[in-house]
Image: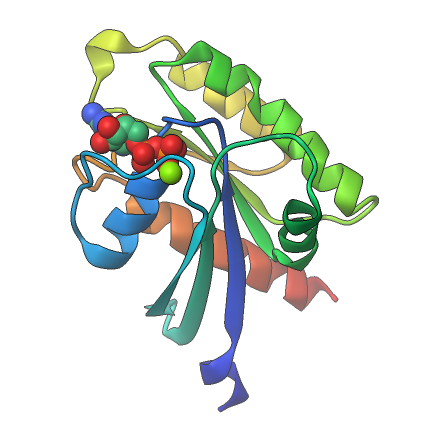
Length: 175
Ligand code: GDP
Ligand code: MG
């Protein structure tokens, strides 16, 4: 069916070091990366079934800069869903999410864009700087879901990617 070939263009945004690459690579390759070159922007493809429907995910792992470039504007325009990622051990990365949200708004004014917030590194509870309730509250403000993830433990990784595809599908059904 045409649905089987449906490609979902997802983009993961967030500050350097929060674990964007680790999340994507854990989702696609089922392994944890200790190190990934923080300047590399790369895309990953993954076939999966979500709610009994096939999906072909095309995930862009970005390098966490907020200045505007032609390339960045291009992928912000093409992205169908965005993961806003921060680390629960880094308050600044949480505060910066609003900057990434504003970047999306700037490129896609007036559009309702499916978003999921991922509070990563939840295995590092002793280093926590952002409360679970704060993540929930930001998600309510942005009208999206919040998951605390651990790329290290592979916790809630599928929930984030599948949840974003579900949000895209729900938006399509509303049309
Ligand atoms: P990016 O710059 O956002 O792509 O971040 P990376 O994926 O390169 O991760 C930055 C560092 O955090 C690396 O040393 C990762 O191994 C580590 N890291 C990523 N995710 C987790 C996690 O869930 N738990 C822990 N403990 N470390 C993580
Ligand atoms: Mg990276």
